[in-house]
Length: 195
Image (cartoon, rainbow, N blue to C red; front, top):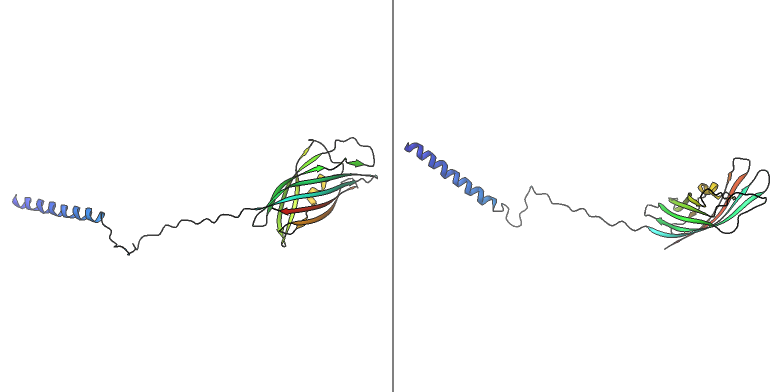
């Protein structure tokens, strides 16, 4: 029995020594100041550089739109448009504008359709050979269901004036068949002034 008691006492002594060593090790730093832990990985905080704000420009346009009919005669409308365009660092642009009828639309003959008074324009653009090429699409019209006797909505998608990246002015003249042996044409003078 004395032998068994000795074994138990030694097991308890070793267990206490191991426990005390583990406790002491958990409270101490194995690497003194100035010595890096070889297993430690520095935590990197991602650095976000703020994206530069897009350049904003004021857009102004004067547009004359004409519908030449194959049976003879024509209709014409004059438009003034204004809006804003945002240009990003990648050379892409987006914006909106409103074209309003600048005076009564006129035809060489009597007609009874309801004349459009305003057209909302969606503006897009991209950099092409160091210049900003703009394009336009219709985003709505007033009054709803009206028509432009001069045919501006029919030529909008063809108007692509190009200006310098720092702004400026440009002209565009486009024509398109009307599907009935006549044609639509529009002449646009655009000015973009960056803020």
